[in-house]
Amino acid sequence: MVTFLAGGTGTPKLLDGAVRLLEPSNVSVVGNTGDDIELGGLLVCPDIDTVLFRGGGVLDRETWWGIADDTTTTHTELHRLAEAAGLEPGPRYLPEELQTAGREIARWRRFSGVAEFMEIGDRDRAVHLTRTSLLDEGYRLTEVTRLLAEAFDLEVDLVPMSDDPVASIVHTEAGELHFQEYWVDRRGEPDVEDVEFRGATDASPTQEVRAALTKPVVIGPSNPVTSVGPILALSGAREALHATPVVVVSPFVEREVFSGPAADLMNAVGYEPSTAGVAEAYPFADAFVIDNDDGTDLDRPTVHTDVTIDDADDAERVMRAVATALERVTEP
Picture 1 (spheres, one colour):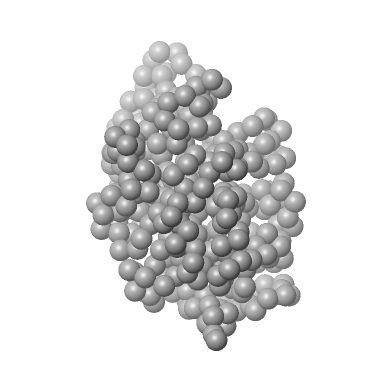
Picture 2 (cartoon, helix red, strand yellow):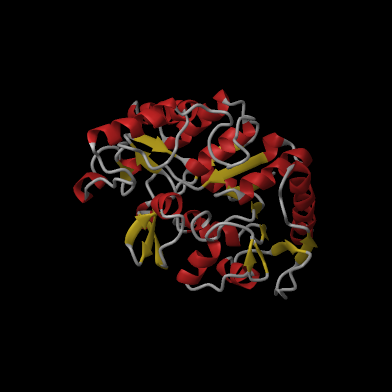
């Protein structure tokens, strides 16, 4: 039995290999919710949905976001209405006093739906509408996620990191930006000064997450700051990881990142943007999987392979290296 910490695209890509080598019913996935936003009143959980859509066989694998071949009629009409009404497009962060009003799970991440800045497909929107409505009916986010997983015939057990709100806020030269505004709208261009996981000190891992973290844990080649950092910021999460075998797949080849804003974000929070920096960020890790071309000398067991993941065969290759690393740190 193995638990994956999933954020961004790195770990979800690795899951393609995990379900080939492992019995899916023995795989748990703890999804990052620090990237979630409320957009036009609907709670959008990007990292949860990437795992959900991947397992359901509907993920758009060109973008690793949303549902493949989805229509965007509602999105297009929202932009037409805003333009015709003379309304300013782009992220419309709601006033500060409204950030903590309404449903608690959406705190500090509430955006207007006027000319929405994230393109959301019509089938994708139905997921967010169902999720938000079930939350309003009194379900926990964990319960909602499992109901949606059942609707998509997900074979692995997917749970959010917490039922409490945590918002990844990127402090930049342009001011405080929610991670989605920083990455989706600003394309990661403003210089980053710090990253805050707002609400994390008051948020708790659920019982389901605590149980999942008693199993061996795999952290795929995801961004250590905003994809995994919100999970680690929860009370007791790091302690749980120190008490169980943990294998990490580096998202770097020495100092070169595979994709995304990991280098800028790591630099901003005080870690060297490199495989060595990843090891420093994860002191609880027992072993690492790094690329064949990565000559970083780590102080913990290391397995080399080609870490590039472009398809399921690549994911299986990397997952075999992960399995080898797990064997090394779990043998009696």
